[in-house]
Image 1 (cartoon, helix red, strand yellow):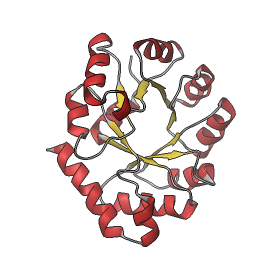
Image 2 (cartoon, one colour):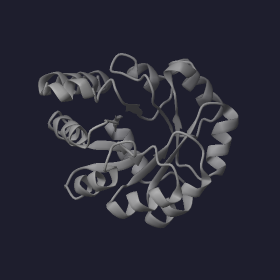
Image 3 (cartoon, rainbow, N blue to C red):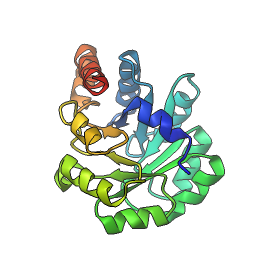
Length: 209
């Protein structure tokens, strides 16, 4: 039985992966993307003060916030206590499953090969994060994995943008993660809200079409 949060993620289609070197830039990215119509966000643990940012964002109505690049169970517990609804790691780590189950959160573990997908499933993942997607074969690779694992929920991340996202979805991905193609820290640092929001609206428009 799939995690109840998956339907909400599938409806959103895009999960922005917020990975910035500056905390204020991460908060700004969320604010600007939210104005453009995006309400799901993955805040990676590489952002300074990520747990505090998750706590702040999780308190806002209408946002679905998760934690990315979670290195261990202790960090997962801190993120969940701060309000994270999903936990993401770009590798297989079975220690992340118990705190997620206890909190009712969705777990996404990374995998590329069929062997890794099986390991992720055995470790208790709800979603398989195909990472890095582009350098591992792109939509064709996701399609191949989907043929072997038709019941698995896949979320490709890494090199996904507005142009190729529809191809990933057509290949069998349930939703996609977008990082630097959507959360461009150089544009945020310049204060170019219009460019960031134009990219977000373009992605949303292409995927919805």
